[in-house]
Image 1: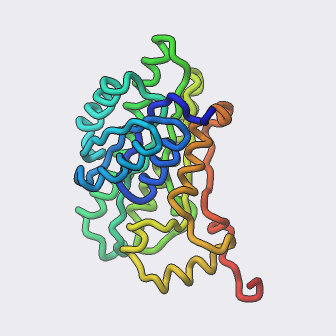
Image 2 (image 1 turned 90 degrees about the vertical axis):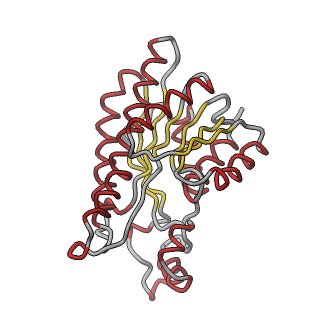
Length: 262
């Protein structure tokens, strides 16, 4: 039996990059997918088609997770469409690179609204739905927050993003404590430098090659690396794991490989 057979999963920011990889990994393990992103429906169609080819159902909801009313409507419509919600993955986030002394307040606010408040809305409203289901006789639920190794590393030009990821990591720990009596697991994943369209748009191929050579594992992470970790935490194999911060970074936070080690 597949790890997520018969489960309904919501993944925010799932039309591209890391969210897309997470959604496809969950589908490959038997989950049906509610896909959310700000991307156009045309961009989401390829993800839905890939999920359908895996024999799973998928539907796309376009919208901004920083809009609390939208997230409330999203959760309600997911449940009306699929019948219930078992897995919630709060992945959506943005980063607008700027040094602190040069940062435009509207960019700082936008980063926090999506990357911090959007995660809060998603987690809180998904948790409320899961608690209702438990009160109706269903068993547990899984909430997974996609944070970042930026929580541990003071990455220059990313102050607002660093702040937001630190905040949602603490949210995950707090929510894990509060939801444990309901047997709802809450865990946080910290991806390292990951090969996504967003990463490639922010830097050059030469820089990425140099960076991958410094990662102890010897390569950049992939969306599938993160997706497989999500599958594990969403599965019954992780039923006794909650409040955990899981690095998926190939040793990135351990420090760079030095020339004498190569």
